[in-house]
Length: 248
Image (cartoon, rainbow, N blue to C red; front, side, top):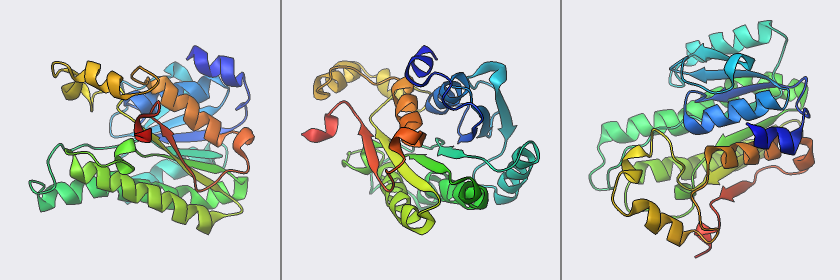
């Protein structure tokens, strides 16, 4: 990821980073970015293949709904060199149903992944992050800030993740900084169905003041910025990586 090298050089050398959802587009870009900037990187995902970052990223199989599996993954990572410095929760699940069509099973599944999954990971790694005076970055969504007509449970789960970010920032201060990113739609496996719709991309671009769809790398660079020393006095904040979409 040349953008990360250009922006950060090797400034994350010696840092230990865990990214959940590393097999996805955004998670994979974040893995690649930190690896290019010199960090030791672990991806935690249900899938251990398909992630980015090449051999510089180690992929561990664990489902964010499975606390014992996350504890085991954390123990394996810490055996290889101690506590981590940075945790990025980049996993996610989307269910495109309206609020009235959403079932109890839909609600349970999406909150278990999007909110409780991040919560579990923060709990599992919190002690080590405190010891290292580390940083957590949660990947939320602009739909957690601005209401959308479809994917109601997804948007509400991301709004909850944003508030969790604020609460955890208070609880873990002054030892750990906790921030969130709220990107607008990025090309990924989760959004492929949207981009297949005639006219969708053009209408979305027309609504974004900066005039383009963000890339996964845009989100990765923002996550790296929040985790960097340059943002060392920033905690409990949400950065909208949306090209100005939420301004109107």
